[in-house]
Length: 340
Image: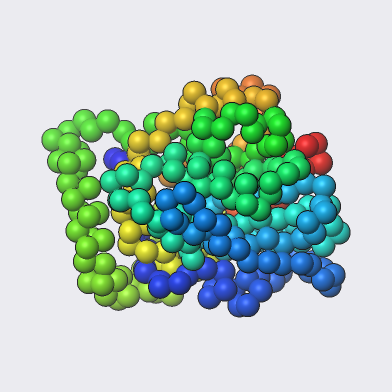
């Protein structure tokens, strides 16, 4: 995908919120009031039809009026939603919302199933989300939130299961995401060569992941070089060093395979036609003003196809709004939850 480059994340045998945040998967943030109420929390392994097991965390009462399901982005994990979950903790503790977060296939603690690397598509993630809904939110209204590849996952769900939208799915938040056109057509001989070689390079990296991991360990997330690269690609000018370090840690817990297998799938993603299905429900669209991976024009295309959607372009922020401005993301989700 010409013009889209991310640092290859460091492999982790069993990455997820538990390793990175402690047993409860939560690190308190300054300025966020933490509730003392006891919140029911369960961990699940959701099976898919091809044998993958999706690691999911459910917080809140099964009797809550609405379930919120959050899907994360490429080379991240459900831990990338931690700050938003902190903001929503009072709602969950009050019993008004049930929160479901899960690791996408091949990310965090979720397994790959039987899919081959050259069969990986965003459509597969849409079916995975359908499996999560069937297993963990089989009845009642649902609001969906997706960041980056997670937003694309929601579009894939809408394309494959339009009957869910408006019936079960009552609202959608699309954060730093796109309906397609991420891969620019190669214009030069060098770009055409890059397009031909990238799949081979990715396959080589997966086959030699131990060697690649050794190279990556030389530049760990704590190193200034690593953080400078992550900051430049993913964050806006308002991001703190702590935010950047945290994002680097989450990315570094993903495998070489998750990077290599999903990279071409992102370039092939095209769900512009599916947006018509989302017109049946309220949609919140948020994007960082300086997002380099899914620039503002992608969100503008979304609202062009969704005339009733609410667009927020957030100054000083990049591609990581769930970290950079979790308060705004949580506020958008609350609007959807209240209007479901």
